[in-house]
Length: 356
Image (tube, rainbow, N blue to C red; front, side, top):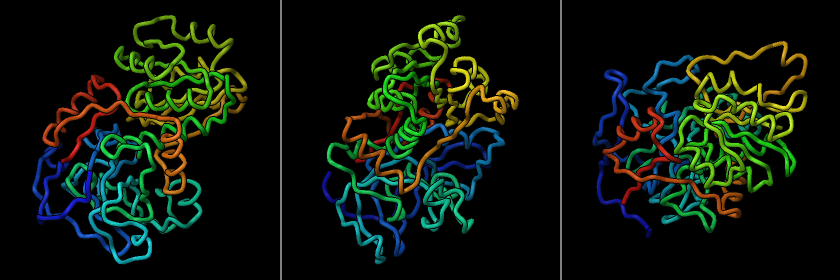
């Protein structure tokens, strides 16, 4: 993809409207970058389950900031122009870039540096795709401080999933702090999980893939899972996992939005040593047994999305180990179909839109 030239003032964008709970393909103005921003022509935008949560009732803190709002928070693209600020001056026209969706935060306080931009001490953080316009559009302005030039080996037209699913999956796996040869269960082998399996294998772990969709389990096998089980149709899957692992997995990473999968997970975790890594966000709050936690039956950690500080190591690891998202491509006007496929667990890997 060469250096894009801006020759128009409006663009097409897929916008969610809370008034009818539907998507609308609207013509909207192309934004202009502020001092700290770069204007990017989107090369690829991919769909995340968090985007679909806009259409669902939930009590997990997902807030719509403007209406209608352009959805999407996973994308890569090419720099068209830059603001006049110092951070923006690090980029030039034609740079192939990826970015994360947290904006309007300081990027400098302890929460921004060490935890997540959502907890910025300024209290001003907004998320593109939710509280501000996101990436299912032809152009977007992103904060230069949350943007990076793609390393060699990362394709701008297929790398969009790495900038949410990839960063999340990488850190979810890495933060389990296992040793090579230990057992990890990847719960949910779809858009996030198929990447999690690849990261786990690249780190030397033995992997069991769990899902309720056979096509996701087929993808898990292709990504290197040692064993896979359909937890919906195989009545003995928990017993089999315990037998294979000699008493339970050392870590179970849950990428699903299924409360039942969280309820089922402790039974396959090695008592006293194992870890439940919380990534996927169900509609309902989780219910953990306080006695289990107090007596050390298993530990609990969380990991979701990333910051501009931990984005780069995830992307560079992906380039080094040839981590590739399975990406099925659609047209921008087909985004409602993509949402439907995700809702009915018919998607394999990630679904995305590639722009000309």
